[in-house]
Amino acid sequence: MAQSINFSANTIGGSTSFTPAPNKVLSNENYMSSADYTFAQQYLPDLYEKEFERYGNRSVSSFLRMVGAELPCTSDLIKWSEQGRLHVRATGTIDGTNGIDGAGMVGHDFRVNQTIVVINTQSGREGKELKALITAVADNSITVEPYDRAELTTTLTDFTDNDTVELFVYGSEFNKGSRGMEGSLEASFESKENNPIIIKDKYEVSGSEMAHVGWVEVTTENGASGYLWYLKSEHETRLRFEDYLEMSMVEGEPAASGSGVAALGTAASGQYKGTKGLFYEVQQGGNTTSGTIDDRDDLEALAKVLDKEGAIQENVMFVNRATSFDIDRVLAAQNNSGASTSSYGLFDNDEDMALNLGFTGFRIGYDFYKTDWKYLNDATTRGGASTIDGLVIPAGTTTVYDQILGENAKRPFLHVRYRQSPMEDRKYKSWVVGSAGGASNSDKDAMEVHFLSERALCVMGANNFILFE
Image (cartoon, rainbow, N blue to C red; front, side):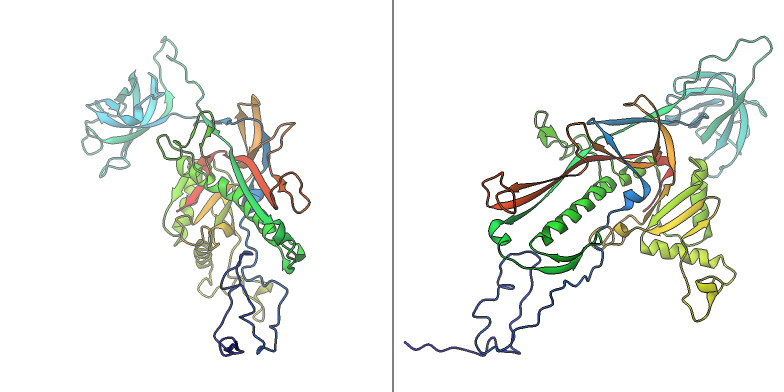
C-alpha cells in the first residue's frame, strides 16, 4: 500500500529544535531519530568538538588550602584546650546597698581583699564608675565597700539598686599583720572538641555506554586540557566531591540533642552526629557583625574587636564581591582625591593606562589583606541567596594543648584533621567497582567510581574570627 510522507515538519528552517542533555540520557529533546532528519535534509550541522566553557572555573574549593593545613588523626573525637582570660571580669546587678549578684556572677572568681573597678552599664547612667574593696564573697555574689563613699548606692545619680554593672579586678589591699589571700585562682581554660564526618560520592556508567564512543575536547578546572570520552562526567564528579570536602568543613553543623538528624540511626549501626564547621564555630564562639561597611568607623570597629580578643596583627578578609566594593569605596574616600580616585592606580597613573580602583590590603591598627572568596560569589552556592558576606581570619599559628598527644602543639588557626592509621588512609579514597572499564570485581555490567573521605575542621581561637552577616 502506498504511504504519504510529510516533508514540511523537519525541513531546513522548520520549527523542530533539539536540547542537549547534561547527562547521557535519551529523551525526546536530545534523541535525533530517522524521523527527525529526512531525506529532504541535504546538509548535516557543523559540530564544534570543543566544549565551550561558559562558566569558567566552576570549582569553589581551595579556601582551606590557602589558610590552613591538613593533619592526620586516629580517633572518632578530636579534643584540645584553649587558654582562658588572664584577668577576672564579670557582669552583675547591684543588690541593696553594697551587694552585687546576678546571672553573670555565677561561679565567679572574685576573692576577699581584692580591689575592683565597678562600671555602670544601666541605660542613662552608662560609664559611671568607682573603685571598691571586696569584703565578702558567696557562690553567686560579692559584697563591696567603695573607696569614695559610704555605700555603693549613696549617690543616686551614679548607682542605684538593680543597676547592671561590669566589674574587674585591678589589685588587692591588706592590713598590717593580716593573713594571706584566701583561696587560689586556677588557670582557666576551655576544652574544645569536634568529630570527623564521612563524606561520599559516586559516579556510574554502564558497560554499553562505555562502548558508545563520544569524544569532547575540554579544558578542566585543574588546568589539564585535551579530549575526554565518557569519563568527562567522572572527572566532574571528582571535582564536585573535592568541593564538597571543603564546603562540608565550612558549613558543617553538629546534630543538636532532640533534632531529627540526631534521632536517625542506632547505637549499633552508628548515629549521625554532624560536625562543627567554620561558620558554626565563629557564630558560637567568635564575633559577628551585620550591615554594610559604609565608612571609616566601620573599619575601626573591626580593629576595636581585635583589641578585645587576641590582637593578632595580620588578618585576612575573605569577602563577597559586594563587600569588597564597599571596602574599596571607604578606602578610596580616605584618599585626598578619593572622589576621582586619581591619585592611586596602576603604572604611575598614566592617563593612557588602566586605573586600579581596588585595594588588596590596608592598615588600621592591624594589617588586613582583602581577597574575594569565590564560594560567596558563585551562583550555585552562597552567591545565590546568602546571609554570609565575608569572614576575617587571623594569619599564622597558635599554641594549644593537644589532649591526644598530651603536649603543647603549634597549629594553624584553621586546619583539617583526617582519619589515618598505618592500615587505612581515609584522607581521600577512590576505588573502582564493576565489570567494565578494566574493573572485574563485580557482576554488575557497569563501572562505578567511588569517593570517600573522613575529616573534621579544627577552629582554634574562634574569638579571633569576625563573621560578616
